[in-house]
Amino acid sequence: MSDVGTNVVRSLLASLDGLVSGFGGRLPLFVAAVVVMLVSWWLGQVTFSVTRKVLARTSTAGHVDLLVARFASAAVIAVGAVVALSVVGVNLAALVASLGLVGLTISLALKDVLANYVSGVMLLLQGPFKVGDTIIVEGIEGTVIDVTARSTTLRIGDGRFVHIPNMTMFGATVTNVTTAPVRRFEVSLAVPADADLVAARELVLAAVTDVTGVLVDPAADAQVGAVGAAWARVVAHGWVDTRVCSLGDVQAAALVVASRRLHEAGLAPTHRRTV
Image (cartoon, rainbow, N blue to C red; front, side, top):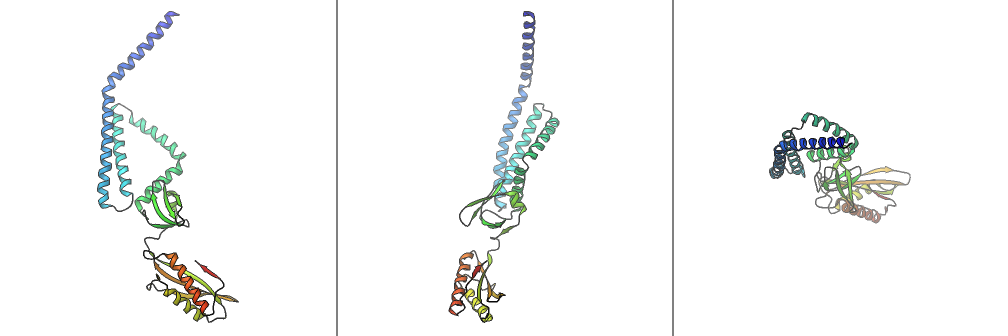
Protein backbone atom coordinates (compact mmCIF):
# COMPACT_ATOMS: atom_id res chain seq x y z
CA MET A 1 0.00 0.00 0.00
CA SER A 2 2.81 2.33 0.91
CA ASP A 3 4.53 1.56 -2.42
CA VAL A 4 1.36 2.48 -4.30
CA GLY A 5 1.06 5.74 -2.37
CA THR A 6 4.69 6.55 -3.04
CA ASN A 7 4.26 5.97 -6.78
CA VAL A 8 1.19 8.23 -6.89
CA VAL A 9 3.04 11.02 -5.10
CA ARG A 10 6.00 10.65 -7.44
CA SER A 11 3.70 10.77 -10.46
CA LEU A 12 2.00 13.95 -9.22
CA LEU A 13 5.34 15.59 -8.50
CA ALA A 14 6.59 14.68 -11.96
CA SER A 15 3.48 16.15 -13.59
CA LEU A 16 3.77 19.31 -11.52
CA ASP A 17 7.43 19.61 -12.40
CA GLY A 18 6.58 19.27 -16.10
CA LEU A 19 3.87 21.90 -15.80
CA VAL A 20 6.19 24.32 -14.02
CA SER A 21 8.94 23.65 -16.53
CA GLY A 22 6.54 24.24 -19.42
CA PHE A 23 5.27 27.46 -17.87
CA GLY A 24 8.82 28.57 -17.25
CA GLY A 25 9.63 28.01 -20.88
CA ARG A 26 6.55 29.92 -21.96
CA LEU A 27 6.89 32.74 -19.45
CA PRO A 28 8.59 35.12 -21.92
CA LEU A 29 5.72 34.50 -24.34
CA PHE A 30 3.11 35.32 -21.69
CA VAL A 31 5.01 38.47 -20.77
CA ALA A 32 5.16 39.45 -24.44
CA ALA A 33 1.40 38.84 -24.78
CA VAL A 34 0.68 41.06 -21.79
CA VAL A 35 2.88 43.79 -23.24
CA VAL A 36 1.05 43.51 -26.58
CA MET A 37 -2.33 43.87 -24.82
CA LEU A 38 -1.18 46.90 -22.85
CA VAL A 39 0.18 48.55 -25.99
CA SER A 40 -3.00 47.78 -27.94
CA TRP A 41 -5.13 49.20 -25.12
CA TRP A 42 -3.05 52.40 -25.12
CA LEU A 43 -3.29 52.62 -28.92
CA GLY A 44 -7.05 52.11 -28.64
CA GLN A 45 -7.36 55.09 -26.30
CA VAL A 46 -5.21 57.22 -28.60
CA THR A 47 -7.29 56.13 -31.60
CA PHE A 48 -10.48 57.06 -29.73
CA SER A 49 -9.24 60.55 -28.89
CA VAL A 50 -7.76 61.28 -32.32
CA THR A 51 -10.85 60.00 -34.16
CA ARG A 52 -13.20 62.15 -32.07
CA LYS A 53 -11.07 65.26 -32.62
CA VAL A 54 -10.87 64.70 -36.37
CA LEU A 55 -14.58 63.98 -36.81
CA ALA A 56 -15.56 66.88 -34.57
CA ARG A 57 -14.20 69.22 -37.26
CA THR A 58 -16.02 67.54 -40.14
CA SER A 59 -19.18 65.92 -38.73
CA THR A 60 -22.16 67.78 -37.34
CA ALA A 61 -24.40 64.73 -36.82
CA GLY A 62 -25.03 64.05 -33.16
CA HIS A 63 -23.17 61.09 -31.67
CA VAL A 64 -21.66 59.98 -34.99
CA ASP A 65 -18.14 61.00 -33.98
CA LEU A 66 -18.51 59.15 -30.67
CA LEU A 67 -19.85 56.03 -32.39
CA VAL A 68 -17.07 55.89 -34.99
CA ALA A 69 -14.40 56.58 -32.35
CA ARG A 70 -15.63 53.71 -30.19
CA PHE A 71 -15.64 51.31 -33.11
CA ALA A 72 -12.14 52.37 -34.15
CA SER A 73 -10.85 51.94 -30.59
CA ALA A 74 -12.50 48.52 -30.26
CA ALA A 75 -11.01 47.42 -33.59
CA VAL A 76 -7.48 48.35 -32.48
CA ILE A 77 -7.87 46.50 -29.16
CA ALA A 78 -9.34 43.46 -30.94
CA VAL A 79 -6.34 43.30 -33.30
CA GLY A 80 -4.03 43.51 -30.28
CA ALA A 81 -5.88 40.66 -28.58
CA VAL A 82 -5.50 38.47 -31.68
CA VAL A 83 -1.78 39.22 -31.85
CA ALA A 84 -1.39 38.47 -28.13
CA LEU A 85 -3.15 35.12 -28.47
CA SER A 86 -1.00 34.16 -31.45
CA VAL A 87 2.14 35.01 -29.45
CA VAL A 88 1.30 32.48 -26.73
CA GLY A 89 0.54 29.84 -29.35
CA VAL A 90 -3.25 29.75 -29.29
CA ASN A 91 -4.80 28.01 -32.31
CA LEU A 92 -6.62 30.98 -33.83
CA ALA A 93 -8.62 28.86 -36.27
CA ALA A 94 -10.10 26.79 -33.44
CA LEU A 95 -10.67 29.92 -31.39
CA VAL A 96 -12.52 31.64 -34.23
CA ALA A 97 -14.69 28.55 -34.76
CA SER A 98 -15.53 28.40 -31.06
CA LEU A 99 -16.29 32.10 -30.89
CA GLY A 100 -18.52 31.77 -33.94
CA LEU A 101 -20.56 29.05 -32.25
CA VAL A 102 -20.79 31.03 -29.02
CA GLY A 103 -21.71 34.17 -30.95
CA LEU A 104 -24.49 32.34 -32.79
CA THR A 105 -25.92 31.08 -29.51
CA ILE A 106 -25.79 34.53 -27.92
CA SER A 107 -27.30 36.21 -30.96
CA LEU A 108 -30.26 33.83 -30.94
CA ALA A 109 -30.82 34.36 -27.23
CA LEU A 110 -30.46 38.15 -27.40
CA LYS A 111 -31.78 38.87 -30.89
CA ASP A 112 -34.07 41.70 -29.76
CA VAL A 113 -31.27 43.39 -27.82
CA LEU A 114 -28.88 43.06 -30.75
CA ALA A 115 -31.56 44.31 -33.14
CA ASN A 116 -31.94 47.44 -31.00
CA TYR A 117 -28.19 48.04 -31.04
CA VAL A 118 -27.93 47.56 -34.81
CA SER A 119 -30.93 49.83 -35.34
CA GLY A 120 -29.32 52.43 -33.06
CA VAL A 121 -26.14 52.34 -35.11
CA MET A 122 -28.13 52.79 -38.32
CA LEU A 123 -30.08 55.71 -36.85
CA LEU A 124 -26.89 57.42 -35.73
CA LEU A 125 -25.29 56.95 -39.15
CA GLN A 126 -28.31 57.96 -41.23
CA GLY A 127 -29.23 60.87 -38.95
CA PRO A 128 -33.00 61.31 -39.61
CA PHE A 129 -33.01 63.42 -36.46
CA LYS A 130 -30.65 64.73 -33.81
CA VAL A 131 -30.76 65.70 -30.17
CA GLY A 132 -33.02 68.73 -29.75
CA ASP A 133 -35.27 67.95 -32.72
CA THR A 134 -39.02 67.55 -32.26
CA ILE A 135 -40.27 64.38 -33.90
CA ILE A 136 -43.45 62.33 -34.19
CA VAL A 137 -43.20 58.54 -34.09
CA GLU A 138 -45.95 56.00 -33.51
CA GLY A 139 -48.32 58.84 -32.65
CA ILE A 140 -45.95 60.19 -29.96
CA GLU A 141 -44.64 63.73 -30.38
CA GLY A 142 -41.72 64.94 -28.32
CA THR A 143 -38.26 66.46 -28.26
CA VAL A 144 -35.27 64.14 -28.68
CA ILE A 145 -33.27 64.19 -25.44
CA ASP A 146 -30.80 61.38 -26.07
CA VAL A 147 -29.98 58.75 -28.67
CA THR A 148 -28.10 55.71 -27.43
CA ALA A 149 -27.26 52.45 -29.12
CA ARG A 150 -30.29 50.82 -27.47
CA SER A 151 -33.10 53.39 -27.32
CA THR A 152 -34.16 56.93 -28.13
CA THR A 153 -35.44 59.18 -25.33
CA LEU A 154 -38.16 61.76 -26.01
CA ARG A 155 -39.57 64.43 -23.71
CA ILE A 156 -43.26 64.77 -24.51
CA GLY A 157 -45.52 67.76 -23.96
CA ASP A 158 -46.45 67.01 -20.34
CA GLY A 159 -42.80 66.72 -19.30
CA ARG A 160 -42.60 62.94 -19.13
CA PHE A 161 -39.75 61.00 -20.73
CA VAL A 162 -40.52 58.23 -23.21
CA HIS A 163 -37.89 55.62 -24.08
CA ILE A 164 -38.54 54.07 -27.50
CA PRO A 165 -36.52 51.01 -28.59
CA ASN A 166 -34.39 51.78 -31.61
CA MET A 167 -35.81 48.77 -33.43
CA THR A 168 -39.20 50.51 -33.29
CA MET A 169 -37.69 53.84 -34.31
CA PHE A 170 -35.92 52.30 -37.28
CA GLY A 171 -39.01 50.48 -38.57
CA ALA A 172 -41.57 53.23 -37.94
CA THR A 173 -42.45 56.35 -39.90
CA VAL A 174 -40.67 59.26 -38.20
CA THR A 175 -41.81 62.83 -38.84
CA ASN A 176 -39.14 65.38 -38.05
CA VAL A 177 -41.06 68.52 -37.15
CA THR A 178 -37.93 70.61 -36.63
CA THR A 179 -36.77 70.25 -40.22
CA ALA A 180 -40.08 71.81 -41.39
CA PRO A 181 -40.76 74.60 -38.86
CA VAL A 182 -43.63 76.12 -40.85
CA ARG A 183 -46.68 74.06 -39.87
CA ARG A 184 -50.38 74.19 -40.59
CA PHE A 185 -53.19 74.14 -38.05
CA GLU A 186 -56.92 73.67 -38.41
CA VAL A 187 -59.98 75.07 -36.65
CA SER A 188 -63.49 73.80 -37.22
CA LEU A 189 -66.68 75.61 -36.17
CA ALA A 190 -70.41 74.95 -36.60
CA VAL A 191 -72.87 77.50 -37.95
CA PRO A 192 -76.60 77.19 -38.70
CA ALA A 193 -77.20 75.47 -42.03
CA ASP A 194 -79.66 78.16 -43.14
CA ALA A 195 -77.14 80.97 -42.52
CA ASP A 196 -75.20 82.78 -45.22
CA LEU A 197 -72.40 80.20 -45.49
CA VAL A 198 -70.33 82.34 -47.83
CA ALA A 199 -70.36 85.20 -45.32
CA ALA A 200 -69.60 82.76 -42.48
CA ARG A 201 -66.64 81.36 -44.39
CA GLU A 202 -65.27 84.85 -45.08
CA LEU A 203 -65.78 85.83 -41.45
CA VAL A 204 -63.85 82.82 -40.15
CA LEU A 205 -61.10 83.32 -42.73
CA ALA A 206 -60.68 86.96 -41.76
CA ALA A 207 -60.59 86.04 -38.07
CA VAL A 208 -57.86 83.42 -38.58
CA THR A 209 -55.83 85.77 -40.78
CA ASP A 210 -55.92 88.53 -38.15
CA VAL A 211 -54.48 86.34 -35.37
CA THR A 212 -50.92 87.23 -34.38
CA GLY A 213 -48.52 84.51 -35.53
CA VAL A 214 -50.51 83.39 -38.58
CA LEU A 215 -48.34 83.77 -41.67
CA VAL A 216 -49.32 85.78 -44.71
CA ASP A 217 -47.43 83.38 -46.96
CA PRO A 218 -48.57 80.62 -47.12
CA ALA A 219 -51.96 82.28 -46.84
CA ALA A 220 -54.75 81.02 -44.60
CA ASP A 221 -57.77 79.39 -46.21
CA ALA A 222 -61.32 78.46 -45.22
CA GLN A 223 -64.12 76.42 -46.73
CA VAL A 224 -67.45 74.93 -45.84
CA GLY A 225 -66.59 71.38 -44.87
CA ALA A 226 -70.02 69.81 -44.53
CA VAL A 227 -73.67 70.80 -44.46
CA GLY A 228 -76.26 68.93 -42.41
CA ALA A 229 -79.94 69.36 -41.73
CA ALA A 230 -79.40 71.93 -38.97
CA TRP A 231 -75.71 72.84 -38.94
CA ALA A 232 -72.87 73.38 -41.36
CA ARG A 233 -69.20 73.15 -40.57
CA VAL A 234 -66.68 75.84 -41.55
CA VAL A 235 -63.06 74.65 -41.59
CA ALA A 236 -60.13 77.06 -41.69
CA HIS A 237 -56.39 76.51 -41.92
CA GLY A 238 -53.51 78.78 -41.04
CA TRP A 239 -49.73 78.49 -41.11
CA VAL A 240 -47.34 79.17 -38.23
CA ASP A 241 -43.56 79.46 -38.02
CA THR A 242 -42.95 77.35 -34.92
CA ARG A 243 -39.52 78.92 -34.48
CA VAL A 244 -41.31 82.17 -33.62
CA CYS A 245 -44.70 81.16 -32.19
CA SER A 246 -46.24 78.14 -30.53
CA LEU A 247 -48.49 76.19 -32.88
CA GLY A 248 -50.90 75.31 -30.07
CA ASP A 249 -51.15 78.89 -28.82
CA VAL A 250 -51.87 80.31 -32.26
CA GLN A 251 -54.41 77.58 -33.00
CA ALA A 252 -56.23 78.26 -29.72
CA ALA A 253 -56.23 82.01 -30.38
CA ALA A 254 -57.63 81.50 -33.88
CA LEU A 255 -60.45 79.35 -32.51
CA VAL A 256 -61.34 81.95 -29.85
CA VAL A 257 -61.28 84.90 -32.28
CA ALA A 258 -63.31 83.07 -34.95
CA SER A 259 -65.89 81.92 -32.37
CA ARG A 260 -66.27 85.46 -30.98
CA ARG A 261 -66.81 86.98 -34.41
CA LEU A 262 -69.39 84.37 -35.31
CA HIS A 263 -71.13 85.12 -32.04
CA GLU A 264 -71.09 88.86 -32.75
CA ALA A 265 -72.59 88.16 -36.18
CA GLY A 266 -75.39 86.11 -34.63
CA LEU A 267 -73.88 82.81 -35.80
CA ALA A 268 -72.76 81.51 -32.40
CA PRO A 269 -71.48 77.93 -32.76
CA THR A 270 -72.84 75.24 -30.50
CA HIS A 271 -70.05 72.79 -31.32
CA ARG A 272 -66.33 73.43 -31.62
CA ARG A 273 -63.58 71.03 -32.54
CA THR A 274 -59.88 71.43 -33.28
CA VAL A 275 -57.71 68.99 -35.17
